[in-house]
Image 1 (cartoon, one colour):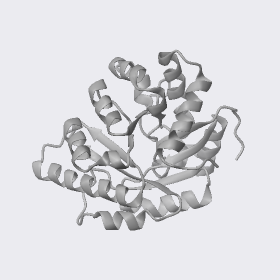
Image 2 (cartoon, helix red, strand yellow; image 1 turned 45 degrees about the vertical axis):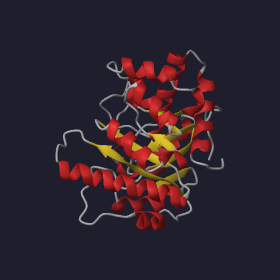
Image 3 (cartoon, helix red, strand yellow; image 1 turned 90 degrees about the vertical axis):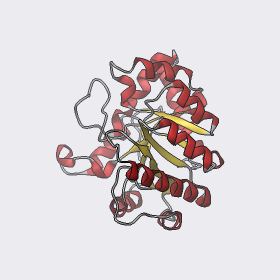
Image 4 (tube, rainbow, N blue to C red; image 1 turned 30 degrees about the vertical axis):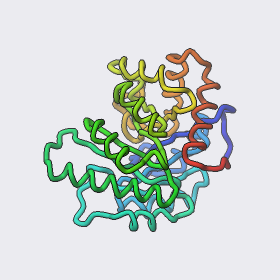
Length: 268
């Protein structure tokens, strides 16, 4: 791997297996190379359902700059739920460095029974993370109080992890930080409507910030509405440097160092 930019970045949350490769000549290698040209040295490809895993395993085995997670997104409907033991076994792959994404998502979902299923699933993920010594990747949408409550009840602070694609208030950020979690900002930070979130980004301690694309979703300005991919994480870093009044190199170094510390991963 040869980085074109000297200042390294990490995309701490992407879904490479979901990218429409038709605009990349059906070659995931082009996506990886574009990331290198933007200075991205590592990518965490995050699992959302069991069916993702064969593709994720293959990606990680082919590209040393890709790590993976194991988890079931809260919105995924399953005929049979996974318990902590199942998750631990699946996470034994050498490139798996995290459990998730997991959490709670009550957006457009008022089904009380399914909300309870999400909570039970979330608890199993936390237990698996603690047992396997792999940090958590947490998704929360219109469910922040319940998310934090489950984290507290299941002692998620004992393993820590990241609140991915953060778009909540400073109060929620502070409660997550107190539970030993990092805060990850995505392209949402660049949206015109994200003034409150940018204020949150000013307050989070620099040694607890990660950056991500959540690609292929949430492309940052000026690419909003287009497909996202890891190379575009630099635009999140650039805006973060502006709102924190720090140079780009500092933001790149700190967020990259934070990634390796959060996920207990050695740098290649």
